[in-house]
Image (cartoon, rainbow, N blue to C red; front, side):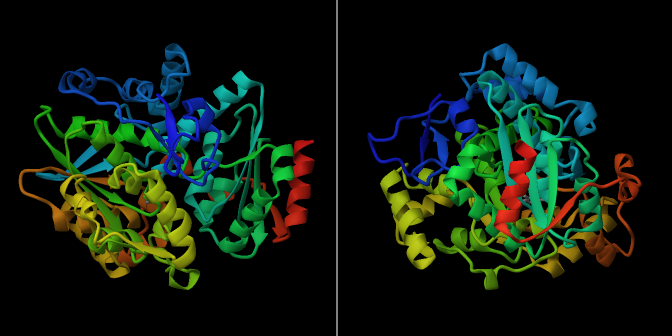
Length: 474
Ligand SMILES: *Cc1c(COP(=O)(O)O)cnc(C)c1O
């Protein structure tokens, strides 16, 4: 299997293999990596995969995309990653039936209680394996307002060859999130609280990444959501959800996905392109409705800081959807020159592009199965209440956005699987607002606020930050 960039100039960029792109972020031309074609899964294969444990299903899916890790090693990495101890059940992603035709697929029982663990836990093991094989080290440097940073730290803690430097805005994460991250005392985990807001942290990451000499000398890398390996790991649970909801491969299901950066639902697109019988892929956004706007109108318009709302489903508060370029690449018949023009030129110049007049835009719905919808704070509160009252099930704010939109666009006879992307305990104050009670806390997180913490508080000063990274590496 080979990988190309969504912006590759014909005949210029060499296709790459999996382990080459594993540790890379963007392609050098600014595009995102995708396989040269999607491997096809036929009905006989689906039947064979139906009864596999999750880790072995992951191995089967991954081996279609990874041909530069020996099969036995890849299988061992999958088995080491997807265990009932780490993910809380044998099923790993158990499907919960709310009523006939409406399901929740639980993706958030991993170490940090959000779906990002599904991919990040695998990434941690893949990084450790590949770095050891090359005899290299990597320093992951990032900014977080909550979910991504903690998922990365729990995936990389104790891993050989990897250090994590994670900045977060001092005092602005929830007490639970702070406790989750700062109680990690592993030598290779560095929590840095910046006196400022999340944007200050992101600016620091950009400033460090722009210093190429520093970046090379200290082997700075990232684990952001455009990494192909993360997307690939997420493809697996679309298969696992399908197998739990159906008994025969002639049945079709729809998935509804709470979306921000378009990573999760892009994995659903990949699964559908491989031949998984998915009817609709429903994109559910919050008030930050960049994606809903596109699927309704054909206009993709990124937002400025002033138009990016702080909502009660904060992990979907995005101004642009960083994985969206992958889908547009497929939608436009893999025309990389056009993609480079839209994402490289038009977006940079005007902050928007418009595909509504392109005949291929209609195929987003007709051919690729995309539907979208939007949910607001009031919808979220009403949905959390409604689901609690009708089914006795407590859902988090992001999952509530998915349930709101998913129920709206459900079709008779086609099961709707809503992806549960976090547990309610992570967003307790909104749950209290909706239900007047605290969410349940999984036993492993009892009392974490009282654990010893390690965090370095610093000013938003790039030189001080570089000096800190350098001293931790030397
Ligand atoms: C990251 C995140 C999302 C959004 O996922 P994307 O892949 O960015 O679309 C939704 N819900 C939760 C809880 C998340 O952490």
